[in-house]
Length: 388
Image (cartoon, rainbow, N blue to C red; front, side, top):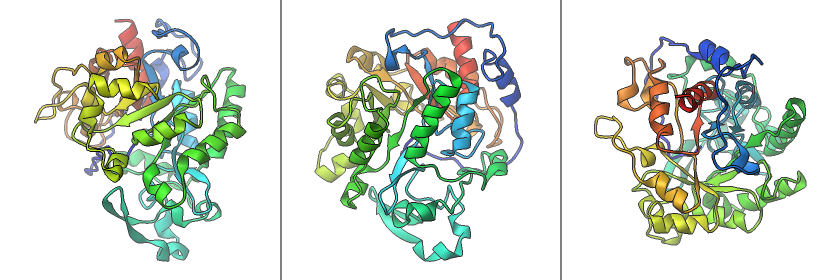
C-alpha cells in the first residue's frame, strides 16, 4: 500500500503480544481447530471478488506485522493466519524490465543494499513524484543484482521483533508470486487471492518502464487477466487504473490518499482535481465507470480530530456503495502510533493498543474489507463483529 501513508518510527521496546491469543482464537483457522463463531457473510453474494467473506481481511504486504513486508515469508504467514486476500506485490520494475515486489522503488530501507560495497556507487538522489528521495532504486539494478540482496524490516522501531528475520528472504518477483499463488491454491484446495499495487506508474512510464503493459502480459501468461480472476489490481493514479481497464478484465481499485492531495498523474497532466473531488458522488460515479472499488485511507472513512481521536464517519461508504463500488480502506495496524488516539494504550511505539475497538468502529461504517498488517487480529475482530 502506497507512499501516501505516514510511517511513525519512534523508538522503544515493550511487546504487548497478542499473536498467541489471536492465532489460537481466530476461529481455529491457523491451527485447523474447529471454530465456534459464525462465519463471516458474503454480503454481496455471487462469485469472484463478491464471493469473499465480508468484511474482507486483506493481508497488507503479507502479514507484515509479524515478518518483513513483501517477502514470501510474510505472504505465506498471511495465508496461514487465514487472510482472505494477500497484498502480494507493490510492483516496481528493474533496469531490465522485470517486476519485483517492494514497498517503494527506493530499497535502502527495506533491504541490506547498504551493506553491499559493490553497490555503493548506485546511491543517488532522485525526484520521485515531486519529492527528492535519496537511496538505491530498483530501476538502477538488474534482476540478477537485486537477487543478491535480502529483505529487512522497514520500521524496526515499531517492530523490533521482525528484525529477527532480517536477511532471510529475497526480493520476490511478480512471476514468482503468481506461481506461488497457484501452488498455494493447489495445496489448500481453495482459491488464493492476491491484490498487487502498481507503484508510481507515471514516474516509471517516463523512464520507459511502463507498468500496466508488463502487468497485463504477466497476467495473460498465467491466464489471470479475466473478470473473475483472483487478482485485484490497484493504484493511486486513476489514469493508470483506466489504462489497466483497457488491457485486462481484472477487478480494479483506485487508491485514495488524503482529501487535499492530488494524484501524481493529475499533477503531471494539469488536472486540478484533488481526492476531495474524487470522493464526491460525481467523482465516485466516474470511478465506477472503469473500476470495481476504491481503497481510501481510513481517515476518509472516519476522520480524526486535532487530538487524533475519531470523529463521526463521513458519507463515503454510503456514497461509494450507491455508485456500485466496493470500499477497502487502508491500513489498520496493532501498534499504538498507528491507531486513533482513543484506542492507544500507553506510549510504547511497539506496544499494542485497543485495536479491537478500532476494528469495531471501522466495521460499523459498512466497509467491505480492510487492509491490515495483522491478519490474525483482523480475523478475530471480524468474528467479534459478525457475532455481536
